[in-house]
Image (cartoon, rainbow, N blue to C red; front, side, top):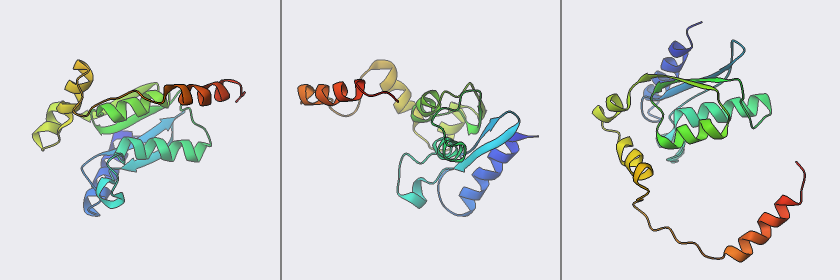
Length: 147
């Protein structure tokens, strides 16, 4: 089965509906598509609803799990840092992408800003640590639970 073709069709669906950019993705495990999604940033007014995130959410919900160990993510473009992190949090084993980060930049997406920020540690917003003691309390409460 051509899983990238399914991802491309997801991207086309999103474009045709005016829901977001040309980003579609599918999650496959054991030869079966378990999740799919496309960019819905415009439709959902949600800057985090990238195609990869949508597919990961769909797969986790369908499987009733929070780990997609053993799964492969097929996506129409090299994942932005947020999507790469989402794939890492989901324990996805492999990512297969179609277009490169350079291809994405050529159509006007600013992923390079994010790659630079993460590489340098210099973010465009101010980071402040406060309320640590209260937060450590809740961390302690969590540590005491077994999941």
